[in-house]
Length: 418
Length: 129
Image (cartoon, rainbow over all chains, first blue to last red; front, side, top):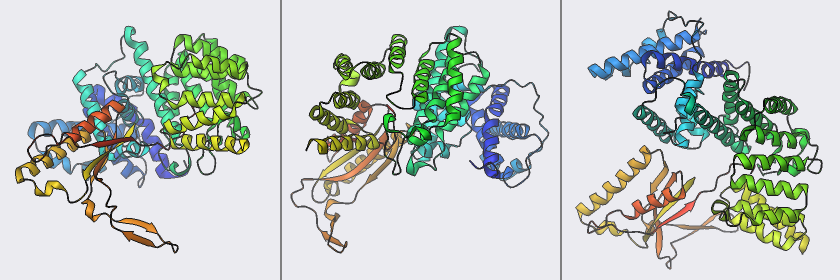
């Protein structure tokens, strides 16, 4: 984003102010859903006005005043069913919104509460993601829709359904009880991680004009980390994002083709992000945090600090995957653990461990097991078998760059064989 | 996950054209209701109905990159009549939607049980795993 572009500056400011404004309005009216709509309208009005006129003296107060008036109008029109007035609202009074509403310095920061609300367990993952980006991230429905390549109307429906669901389950606007806090926080972290992955996965070639979802996820993770500086998993998640994002410009070629870790030009990796990520992991591990994000971040840090695949500390990566499997046993972790074993020991040892995954219901029909096995067979010099499995994996993946990578890998091996 | 649901119709003019008015109305209402539900569920990404198969044109290029047009292959038994692209949480949900499509009412008001081909749409996202 261009630092001197006034529109970009206004956008940045609005995204920063969104959760604060929403927190104040939601507290005041005790209606999260209606407050969220009102703040969105205030944001749109602010965007139109602030990019062409000087900023108001108290931008947050301005937003809150406009949103509160929108709330009042909403309540009034609900009662009187006088919709005509509200329809013309944005053309009229909003533009003249005065600076009178002063926000007290000690207004609580409700970002965390809003995150808990948006990642409420009653919501589907897709809904939680959309609502988080709008209510906490300050993105418009249209921006979120284009980021996920769905029509704006579809995204609008997802958001309004999400709010209806929240309304129906009527959660109190306060921090969850101690008993459910950990599970609620882990839902928040999961949503932030999914937003990051969505953005990271899409950050190639033709899609650069999309909203930078990984940047947005990092911003929200930073904010969460500031609010909960002593939580090791929050620090771990932020570190994991930074250490992954550091490799962004090396992971795809000129035409968007996938470049695997062992073939990436490591001089392109962002050393500032790596330093920051490593410092976070180290401090989080020093605090004794061994959660799934801090462990994954520790693994990412070992990759990031190695000059190449051969110099990578595979025994330690394997050990970390073993710990990760103990606290969060998933077939994908088992798969990565087998690959790490192959790299630390021999391809045969890794292949032997992969056999234990053959009966896994989740992996059995997935391309990942075939792809991992193909890589290890290639390392073991069993080229014919590797070709067969690369092709089998290519036929099963629904990911186009990955499919292209797998068929190219098979073709390369075939040309060596012939 | 994104899926395309392709609803096929037998080759030749659409049979619905010769249905009774009530049957046509019931069929159209059913499809519109289904589309509305999918849109409200936030699952609908796109959906279109296509003109009759006998309007279909088959195009190949000649050596000058110009189109050589032809009618439809006479041996094709089925033709794409319409499609939906949906984004759903699971494959099971995509199959359930396809079954709803398949149950659209026919000339006698009973479910047509048309064949609907379901294919996953590839993503162009990069993934590290």
